[in-house]
Image (cartoon, rainbow, N blue to C red; front, side):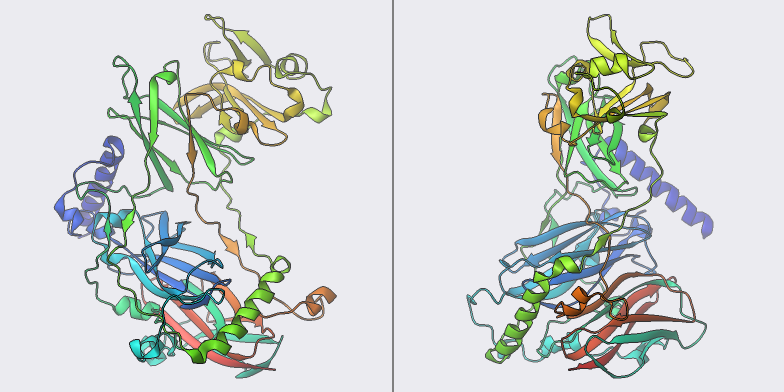
Length: 593
């Protein structure tokens, strides 16, 4: 069996490499489409743990993504990117997020804008690879949104749905979970702004290793739409749904194996210029800029894999070489989905909810007024330093006499850098290599704010007063098998070189960037609490959101603080053990004034 599995894996990887080589629009075997071909062992399924199924405009929807092997429910490391959409009853997409996955785990959040209409919504999760099969494996969850700032366009009555909506508020039956884990709190009642400690314990053999998320939130005193637990999700039998890709059924969607997949196609403006092996560069400018080089295939298709975080909202794409003006670049959009046949569970709103809505809306408005005092922080990923950002010397021009142009600066300040006139009479920047294995015909990699510069004469006479620093490498630089004789990387003071640099051969691409990974703010009170914190209103209803928990001890204790909002609160843990066993545990407590 192990040998057969190796053969299936080999065949799948070969198929993927073939797709990357020959493009997206290739025909797909029916066996792959219906989930029974060589890709079946790699069928993914998504589960989303989100904090609330009923939100008001002005609140945050938090979610954790679990990418799972559809058979074992163990973490899937196949795709590195997933997509999360919030879709309304009129099929408009309220938000569409791209989320990075790390060992099958991702996270995100969304602030519900004040112009979001009241109604029932669906939160949808999927990967690009999942588009090749039926959408049965997509995640679907119900979310109700109430906008207290807008009048209802139509009445919504309790009788239309009965008690069905109350399902999402019922406590999880822990006896159905095999007793793997439990939550215990120190006591059942707390005052405002008080510490609450709860403990995760295992009944036997210690807490199972796995991936989990925890939410502590105010329980609604009104009926809400059902929100699936991990246990309910795992029990659910896959059934046919009505979502479908807008792309033709014979097209295939490549898996995002190494990061974001960005693709496009070249068209030659001249019949005697071939498409195959044309080098295409993608530059994402910024302090932590990204540079990617790739080659087009015989049909002109090319692909970039982005596996680094980046800051810019735009990228510049260009064909390298003297023939660059003979090509037209077209960038391809991510496949869209047709949500026209989605079925929405109705949202219940009754006159009896008026006081509850008003009170909760006031809490939200006060909290949003003081949001700057309770900031979340963005996590920065640690990546290996890419070769195109590895330098031997850095010149901070404020440390030297300022000359008028880059030409003069190269001559008077930069060692081992000079302006060379080639055989065609064009000026180029050159770097003297430490080991001169290559002749002068090899050019350095020239970058300005991370943008690859082919026509050096575009920048040789640029105003040196705009330049912050110049980084030099005298070593050989190889990017995607392209050899450069050193590096000259210029950083401007304003990081705005892109604004004035738009030659005809460059395609400006608007990026659909992944959501940033965050550390969410946790309110603390005690001896170190400042006077400002003590005097700041605290109307939090989401007391804790921990989307990333990798447990493995016999017991784990967590502490958070209550707010000024009284009521019943729920501690809810969701996740999956390393063996794919779903875990859904909850506990409640009271906050009294």
